[in-house]
Image 1 (tube, rainbow, N blue to C red):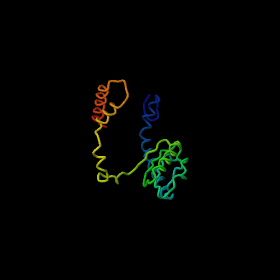
Image 2: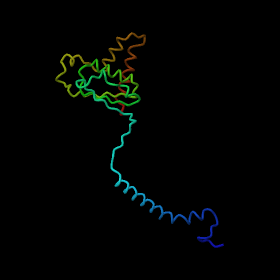
Image 3: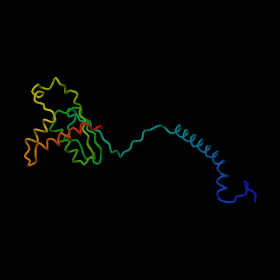
Image 4: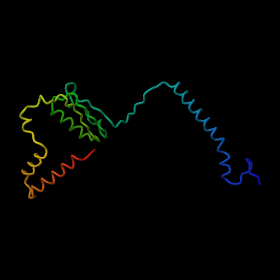
Amino acid sequence: MAKGPGNFQNQYSIVGLCRIPTLGLHTKMISLRQKAEELARSLLPARKLVNPFTIFSKIFYDDTKEDYDKHDTSKYRDQYVKLIVVNKNDLYKFDKFTDRLYKADCHEIKIIEDFTDLNASSVSDDIVENTEDTMTLLGRYVDESDTPLKKDRLKENLAKLYHEAQDLEL
């Protein structure tokens, strides 16, 4: 029996026969799809679709412009909230507002503050003179703690952990 376009001996013969014509059909379909998309873009006006179901929110905290005791925090439920502090004069009201945000059951709250107004010239000399390094603070904490453990050994382990943490590259 002769092999040719009209004679199929098994199911694989038809696959080999149909490969070449589909490539041409495939490229024609792609070019038609591209032309249809271009036509649709030219006919439809460009408009922005806003998703009503957002999970990210930003709050610009400025207590000189708004009273945050009356701010509705229930709308931040199940959301990731970024609290950007623009102006914070009353610390108590800020703490109350953040507590209400946490009670509103947000997934996560990130508080972003700008401390560029703090500089070395505004820090008093008493604060600078009474500062201690981290190992001195840890040693003093161990000395003042009421524990039955050996304090020298505890200080050595804390020093090892401290130096290991400094050597970590993140």
